[in-house]
Image (cartoon, rainbow, N blue to C red):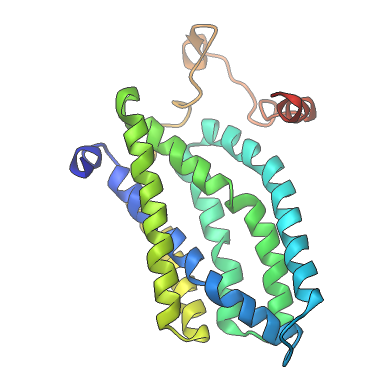
Amino acid sequence: MVGKYLEYEGLGHLFVSVFLYYFASFMVIPVITDVTMAAVCPGRDECSAVIYLTGLQQVMTGMGTLVVTPVVGKLSDEMGRKALLTFPMTIAVLPLAVLAYGRSKPFVYCYFVLKTLTAMACDGSIQCLSTTYLADCVPVGVRTSAFGLLSGTSLCAFVFGTLTAKLLSVPAAFMAASTIAGLAVAYMVVFLPERERGEFYGKVEGVSRRERGGQVSVWRSLPSVSDFTCLLSSR
């Protein structure tokens, strides 16, 4: 079955890129708590500051993801999946590189600031864009199985990333994570094919924009505040 999906252009490269990205992301999860405790509250077993810091990060990340993900998805309709997938995967390397360089208190605070900002563009966007790219590559009849294969790739990355973190020291874990995350970006840029710009937008009222010959501004086509409100209030 895997070989069947890999026949579609770019799909195998997508799986490799997604695996490397999530492998790097999950590798640092088991050690980030110890690093934060050692930097913010050294020598203590309990620290309310770490709880508040982590909670604030999660709240801001969730709110930012709610706004950024639809915008990124809309831009990918116009500019291409690969172009929009490259951006969040690239900036995701920054917080990992900070802790790979140093894990003192200033570096940890810098990590949380960068992680919060980058997670707004990464946490929802990478998963959604990967799924959308996959949907663009396979026929409708096999998309469900292909989505399951993509989810399985992410879960495999979680398992291997967690196990690898147990085998490495804390400095080595962050250095390996930042290196692999950078490798994921480089692999995707080199090997993942891009679809022709404008092919994703579909047809409006039965006539594609290309057939109509009209040009619509990318920014004017982005979701408005009323669109977000309607999304949140709908059931």
